[in-house]
Amino acid sequence: MTNEPLSPAEVAARVRPYVAARTVGDIALTLDDTHIGLRNGYWRIPIRPSREPNPLFPYYEALADIEDEVQEKEGIKVTMASGDPLTDEE
Image (tube, rainbow, N blue to C red; front, side, top):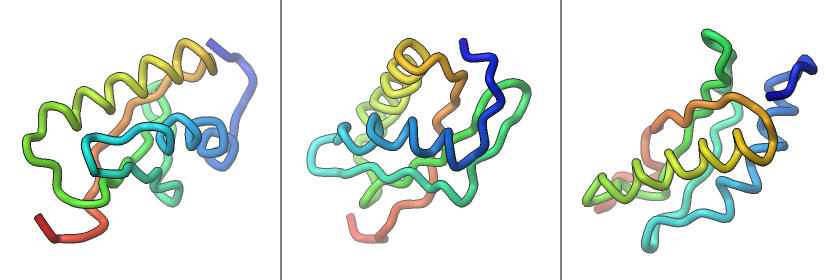
């Protein structure tokens, strides 16, 4: 894991490509960089789906995969947090 101090903006810049590259079916994922924060040694990264996922399992599985990928390739401890969908359409 990285020991260098990072700002929320730096974390967002390093995590954003992993989020942008991932979709869940036809649902796009967006990083909400206005609410990134460091909690208990992990960066909490809010992720907003383009619409409400249904079923939820593939969505949460994608978030876990992003966490693993970022931690492995970037060395940053992260927790992906589900945010509100960008639209209320289902």
